Length: 315
Length: 208
Image (cartoon, rainbow over all chains, first blue to last red; front, side, top):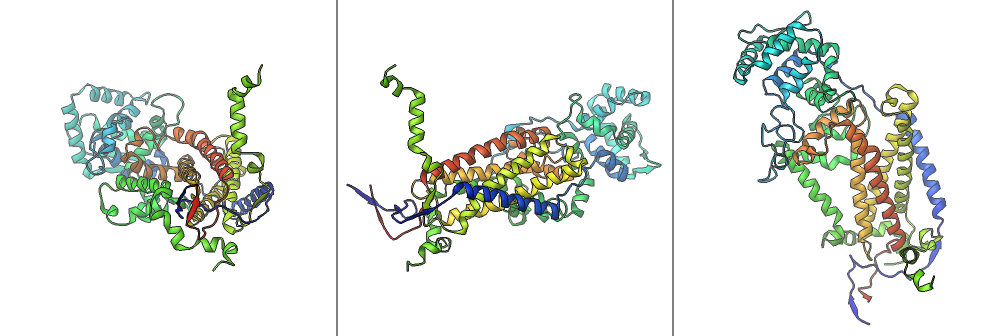
């Protein structure tokens, strides 16, 4: 018989002690009953949150200036989505993990053209609008440089943007069809038609809300509501939910990193935090094989608290 | 048909292998070593019980479709059951995980048991996350628009689009729960095969 060194953090001693009765079926059923009762009690006592979803209609009605400014940022390519980079477009290289821009490397696989997807295509879906139809034809037939001039002239004039009797008023010169397009987009949004147009671009059935969510996210409307509900990133971000509910408390470590340096001031915070969490997840997975980390349980002696009956008679 | 021929059948070999690794008295034990006596053992079975309640309440929610719970008080209550069973599930699971860490429960050839538990934990986080972004309310709008930046920054957002509610819902109700349940079954079978890890003792050598 050969002997090998007993590694206390890897090997387990052979149990030579006694055995006691153990009813695994009874234990399981009791656990299900207790958990079910607790679940019902919590549900009755606290319920669950269900704040209604925001709509472009509500946004453009309650804050038409913000909607119009956001729509203009989609048209002049200055919005968050327009400047995002992959996976939506190639406007920026995106965040980098060291020298590697992972998202850029994967590419723009969910292509979004904010001008067409948020403005032109929805407007084209409106029936019975002869003036708009003419203006859209003018837009479509114009060269890229002409469109840019129109949009630039409108953007310059939009510093004095006003809402008068629910209508968007911008006194712009040499802006081509842009004033009509922007004014009609606001009216379209206020009827609720834009909500539908943004999700039905690929057909009758709609389950992909990428476009309206990005549009909403580009404005300040959703962020302001989230701010009032204490849901923003500086308040532990996406682990929270509305009301006084625990939310995804298990994401605490993920959201924790966003609160501390260097992540809280880094332009690459998202990819750095994700990279760190991936690394920590791998470390957790491989704890049994990592010297030092796998010895902490033995050094800490917390196991004596867990198995205190077993150790009661052992000095 | 000869006995040798039967012995060589794949079915016969598989049955013998399973029966050898996991005889009925190991699969459904009626005794345990005396050291299996601590409050910490409650949290493993509690996690599994909560998983059962999560699945049942999720199936009830599925009966009338994803929007039902917004317009029905009964549906809203079922949603509450789903939410709170998830909270209990994670509470129990995290304590179970820390308990197993401080017991060094990977000892004695149980590393795979530990690893399946960790993967189940990570899979459960993804499952819960897809649920949060599939709620079709303000919470799902906010959480998904916040989460997209992190996932997009890794490149994964090109394939796993958190703003695509249909994709997230499918992952939440089919793919990830299936993975979580399969992993849980595997984890529990490994526990039954290897048994519960014994406490540390003073021996420094083991016979080979």
